[in-house]
Image (tube, rainbow, N blue to C red; front, side):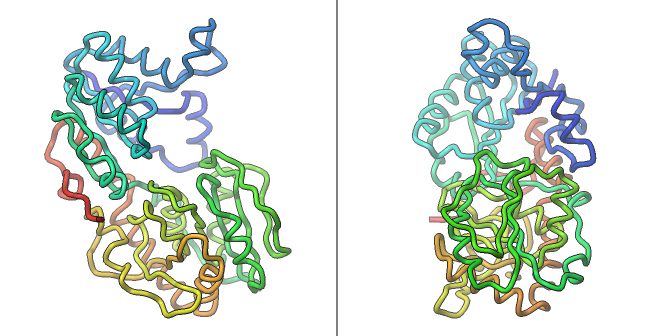
Length: 385
C-alpha cells in the first residue's frame, strides 16, 4: 500500500517556501506517514499543445491516476485536483482504498454538481472542510460512500511567534495582509482620522489578486513587494492590531492571516462574514452601539470542537462593509492596551491548542490510515443554520 499526497506547488518552489519559512502542512503529513509527495508539474516543462491546454492541475491528476493501485490511498490538497483525480481514476478503472480531498470553496453550484457526480463513481473517500458554512452548503451532495470531516485549519506556531516589538513604537501600527476576498476599500475608509499608521502587505505568498481601492488616506500605505515569511512575521510583530477586512464570502477566506496573527500574539479585528466563523471568538462591534455578545457562541474554535467552549475574546468582529464599525473596533484596541494584550495572549494560546500543525497532521494521518478520528473531525450536523 502506498499513500500519495498531492500538493499544488512544484518541487522547486517547495524548496523556496521552506527556506527560512514555516513548515508546510501536507509535506509534514507525508513525512509523518511515509507518503509519496506528488508535486505539481512545472508549467515551463509542458510539451505539446495537449499538455498546455489541460493545465498543470489536470495533468497532475491524470499522471497520478495512472500510478495509483487498488491498495493505495490519496490525499488531494483541493477540489481543483481532487475532482479531476476521481474522474480519471474511474476512467482508468482504478479504485484506491480511499481518496481524501481538502475542500476550500466547494459550495459553488458547479463544484457541488461535480462533487455529486464524481463521488458516486464507486471510489470511497472523505471531504475535509475547515468551514461549518461550507459543510452546511454541501452536506447531502456527496455520494453514499463519502463522508465529511470538519478539521481545524493549521498554523506553524513554532514559526509564527510574537515578541514585544509593538510596545516600543511611538505611533501604533495596524497591519493587514493578503488580498484574496479582501475589502480594502472599507479599511481605507476606516483608516481616515485614525491615530495610527496602516500598512497593507497585499503581495504576500497567499495573495491571488491585487488589491485596488479608489483612494488611500495619508496614514495608509501598500507594500508592493512580496514579503518573505520572516519579513511578514516581523510586520505582524510590529503591529498593535491586525485587521482582516473581508468581502462577505461563504468560505473561510482570511484564515491564514488570522491564524498567523493570533499565533504571533496580536489581537485581530475582522469582518463577520458568513463563512469566517471558526478562528476568533469575540463580539460584533457596531458603530453606534455596545459590543454584541450574542456572537460569542456561534463563532470561534468551539464550532469545530477545536478548543474550549468557554467564551474568551481573542478578537473583535465588525459587520461587512461597515467602515465606521471597523474604525471603532480598532480604536477600542488602541485605547485599551491591556485588553489588546490579553486578546493577543489568549489568541496565541488558542492557536497552539486548536490550530497547531501537529494537531492537523495527526488528524489527516488518521483519515488516510482509517484510524479512529479525534471527536472534532467526525462528521456531524452543521452547527450553523
